[in-house]
Image 1: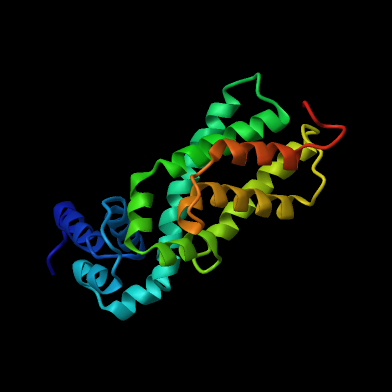
Image 2: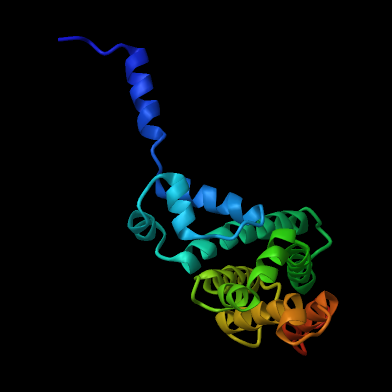
Length: 209
């Protein structure tokens, strides 16, 4: 019986690792989206050399796959904005949160792949971006709710609503600012959104913190 050499084992592992996986599908779909290519599950399955049923089992559906792509990109933007705010010791409380909020919204509004996605099919794109069909909005709300809770526990803000409700309104305000040209034909207004953000977080005893 022949003994497998280290080379043979390595080649066998490489062969196995070259097989498509759910992560492979996600990475390819994300690259397509960033390149402005329409996300078609049949075409994606064909390129991966798997059946469409297998791909559907992996990703759920097109909306959920897009939700994962968009969330991965938003999370990077959010983490970078928070790191910049953390590096500025002069930012505290509402100022700290507003800096993160404005930076995130600015990055999102300037993202060309997002504009391309919205141009291709505005109604579908808005449904993915601003409803629960993709799971994206829930993640955005949870992320902001966690940050608000953290700041409230530290005594840096005194929210007048529960953090989940407050996060919902803050996310909605951001969506209204970023997508206002598509939703109602209005010029996007990030400065106004940040002002509304500050007003929601302010209260008689916390204004100016």
